[in-house]
Length: 108
Length: 115
Image (tube, rainbow over all chains, first blue to last red; front, side):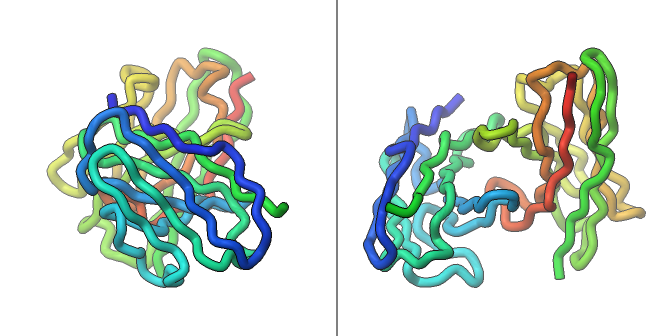
């Protein structure tokens, strides 16, 4: 099973700042990695797939990068609606599909 | 518009059973693989099971293998999850999710409480 580890667990930031979230895989997943955003009481929303491709309708301020075992999600000029929990997920080798534990981005 | 609407959640005693349903609309159901993903209260996401559209390939998380059964009725655009021998650790919101590998469409979820 590929274990996904996200850091940090919580990030406190101010609106307008740029944030970088990290996701590490226990073994290479090449570019088979997705990112999701989840707000309280809502289902997750797909942001990024193939490590760096934005899903339909996702603003350009969200960008993903990485290959192998190290990945990042960058949110430029954080908006109020971006405060949420973010999850990474690998789909390179499954079952099982595995998610990271999440990073909560909250308001400083 | 793609819609996935789960139902069937509720309170059940340990060892009991529950059957979740997911009604799909807004897309050609037979063209898509489907999945269940769950989220325990205050916790992260956990993949549960996946089923291909027509070939019938099925995969389960080890935590539910032998207890849960995923199925679909393509004629009724519906996905199901039969859950037997439920445990306290199965308490979660269960999401019906479309697509394969990564998940572009999610239902609103249905809460299953085992207590």
